[in-house]
Image (cartoon, rainbow, N blue to C red; front, side, top):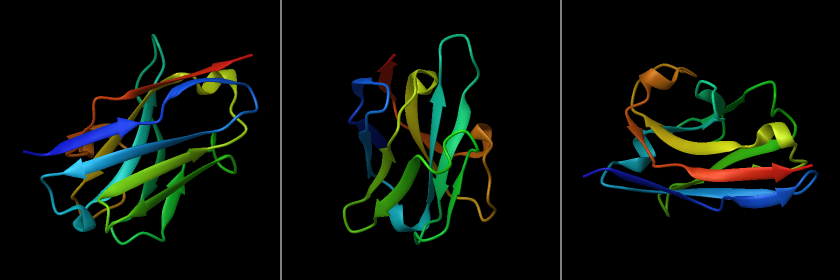
Length: 124
C-alpha cells in the first residue's frame, strides 16, 4: 500500500520560512518523479514544484520561483520543500504527489499517488 505522509506545515509570519517533508512508502521511490501542489480555500489545486526521479532537474511555478526549493533524498524515501520569504498568498494546504510516468507534467490529474496534505498559514 502506497503512503505519502507530509509534515512540517504550520503558522508562520510573512517573510518567514518553513520546510515541508513528505515520507513515501510502498513504492519504488527512486523511480518516481515527485511534486508539490497546494490548494487554497475556494481555489483549484495548483502546481508548486517538481523534481525528477533521480533528482537534479527541478521545475517551479512562477509564483514560487526563487523562494521555494524542492529536493529529495532517495535513501530516505523523502522529498522536501524549503519555503523562504513566505507571503500570505502562500497560505494553502500543501500536498506531495508521486508521478510514475515518463513525461514531465505539472497537471495534478497525471500524478499517481497523493498525500493527505499539510496546512501552511502565513500571517501578514
